[in-house]
Length: 261
Image 1 (cartoon, helix red, strand yellow):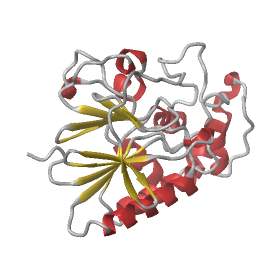
Image 2 (cartoon, rainbow, N blue to C red; image 1 turned 180 degrees about the vertical axis):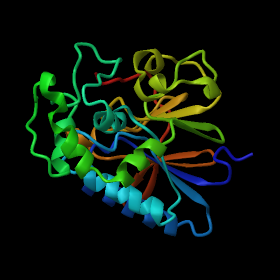
Image 3 (cartoon, helix red, strand yellow; image 1 turned 60 degrees about the horizontal axis):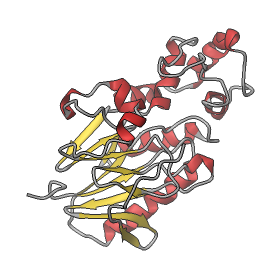
Image 4 (cartoon, rainbow, N blue to C red; image 1 turned 90 degrees about the vertical axis):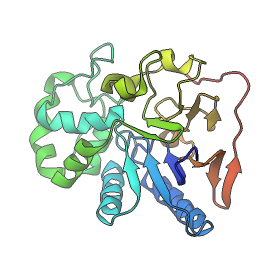
């Protein structure tokens, strides 16, 4: 049985408003698909489409247009993707995973950049106590199609021998019993676990200098919004590669563990 259910799979790491990098990566995917005529394929986006980068709105426009055009794209929910939806309905919401009650408009989270991409004049590090100030503007400026797109994003995807999630999974819990908070947020408990999960976990969320294959998981977030590239892996049966402009470069499991804090 094929490890990818007879398909060629592409998985893209965290975008964070980097529209130009996302468009270029999709150009590479289109070229790679053309090099494999007749091979079914899917493109899996691993979440975190918004925040920090300059064009979160453009990224969502691009993804919504692809969905509406019937492209074979799948989109997963990232922890940052929840903030925009939450802000429109609960502007003072804090993610329970964060300490110190960091609000979405804190520059560490990048919500102000997202609102600016919709034409809302808001500066970085807006006081948390006044967080609701821009809610009405956000309701008016953010298209319903963007809200629906984010609300419809899946939490995970299991195809053949691969399981896709934004952040990872909780060790010791069955794949079909994972909960949202772990799928979009987990870090150390997952990253330092070395045992087999029954499927290779493909994830983003924790930036690495380059795509890393750890045997039981593959890390695809290469810090696009921090000056790194936006990366995609290619999975085709037993083959694993990193996508380049000229095709997939083979990626083998690495020795040891490297985790960038």
